[in-house]
Length: 116
Image 1: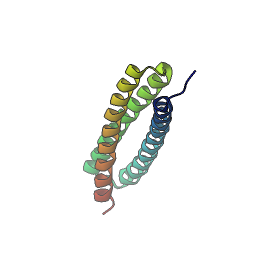
Image 2 (image 1 turned 120 degrees about the vertical axis):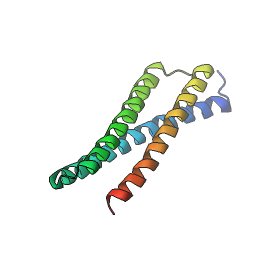
Image 3 (image 1 turned 45 degrees about the vertical axis):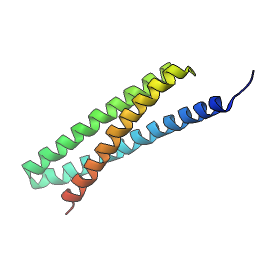
């Protein structure tokens, strides 16, 4: 059996994307913990508008986190070296990556406003 450069490259890309998914999941869980901490601090001072904003951010985090976890489970279940499947997985990976990056960007802005 011959191993070609493209086979090695594809395997490496799949390993990198799996690690990237794990990183996103851990990061989103940490953001969720931080939001819970903000919520507990705000809840004591009874600022209803800030409370609702935190709950909305938590909802967004939960939604994206659930989508990434489901994608990771499906990806692990369906993993094989078929090129056609790899292209579909790369498309899905990039779609989730864009959602993750957008959410973290929004969260940075939200957090900076919250901590002012």
